[in-house]
Length: 364
Image (tube, rainbow, N blue to C red; front, top):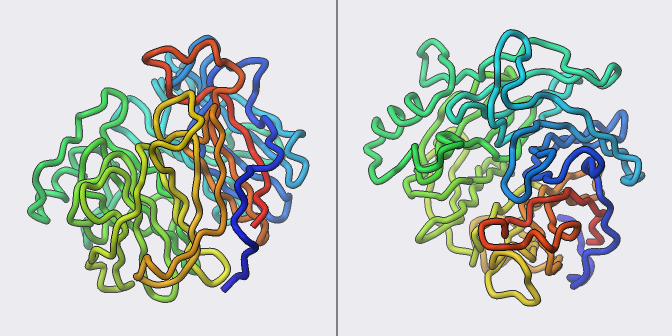
């Protein structure tokens, strides 16, 4: 396992990596890294006029490493603007995947349909048809991923108490950072309030449902795979929010609780161990929503949370929101949302901390 230096209380130099000329709001990245080009690809949601939680524009930032200040953004699509014969309104919950030498971008549109396309790294444009993400249950024929299919799968597990229609823009959610295990990656499908469903994917577009984590999460479930185990970190769970299962068995068991604030956590395999990143409530100073101004990282291995130790800590009163930890050849970079550019917009209803994307190399 990696040897870390003592945990720091400072974030270090942060660089704006979203487009501040065209967009007022920029938020919620899940990125991928192309080691051959040394570029992080970050799809993000934006607005030309709004603030806080906005998703009228879907953009992609190309962020050179280590020259973060040379980042460039490209508009992918916009609500109510036709592309390839269709309209993809309120594009949200995006992620990028480096698959077979290509950058593949996933996103939710119209609240209930997931899509994907490939991005041309040479021509800087969409380089394929925009197609629906498929899901497969056991040996059945794959079908498009929708909340109806997801709900039927939860019912087959005897799940109850879930609500797949709790958010007008997000009936299904899949913002788990791809967890690679050889040529296969794992993730999770969730909703505003629902039991997460673990999936694996071998072809870059078909999510094979494997099992259900038997507790309700709020919005997000993050996945990591290491040494024959699948690890899950759940946002908004009322009891244990750290769960594990054995690869091939897929039966999840509870393994403890971290004091997660109401924002997206992260979990990833990193150099022989598991890296957990989460936010806590009541950390001061803070000018946005409680718990969205800090990040703590723990590092360890196995199911015993008490054996994990703190390796990084940072606070920013203007926001560390929906952070994405990116492994760039062993160096860790973080991309997150922040409201530093628009402090006058921090009024009730706009305390999201999601106005500008920043990045920084983490000193760990």
